[in-house]
Image (cartoon, rainbow, N blue to C red; front, side, top):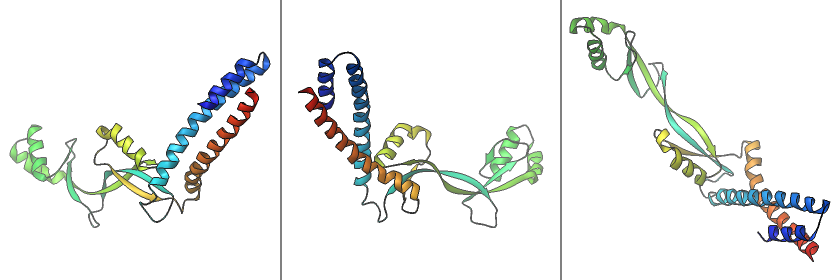
Amino acid sequence: MRLLFALNRVSNNTCGVKMSKYEDLVNTIGKLTKASELVKKHSKNIREQETMATAHPLMVLLQVPKPIVVDGDYDYDKINFRHYDLDDIYDSMDDVRSALIDYGHTQDEADSKLKNTERLYIKEVWDTKQAFLSMEGFNEHIRQNKHNLERPRSYIMHAFRNPEMKEVLESVHVLADATEALRTVLEDLIAREAK
């Protein structure tokens, strides 16, 4: 804020072409100030979570369970049933029989149609939906979107084997320090100009 105040003072003391340069500089510094505050906040959040794992930097993934159909010879969590005359998937053969009767078949017809029921072997896997820089970002997303998420979980993952993400996450710290240093230099220059 001191920087913007000093810039406004300098721009009010000048005229013509110089003033528009200062106005552009004031706008740019305003954007830089806002970006600087965001980068510092994210940098702080990333640094505070460094005790969560031994490898760094970390990413926080949002995952939700996703049912997939697998072969019955392999690991599965449950069996569901699907009948070709019905649109839904059912938890038991009794549920299929009841649905066929509700659909208009007699008990005997429903029993004979059960042979057209397919077994579905279901395995729940964790599906990644989002990635976050910090637990704070993850928690804020959950707070805002919990009504759209079924059994969400956080999954902490390090980025040390992902050079691109590692550079991005480490750059947040560099940007936080650099923008603060740049603001200090600009404040000094503008203070001198204002005299």
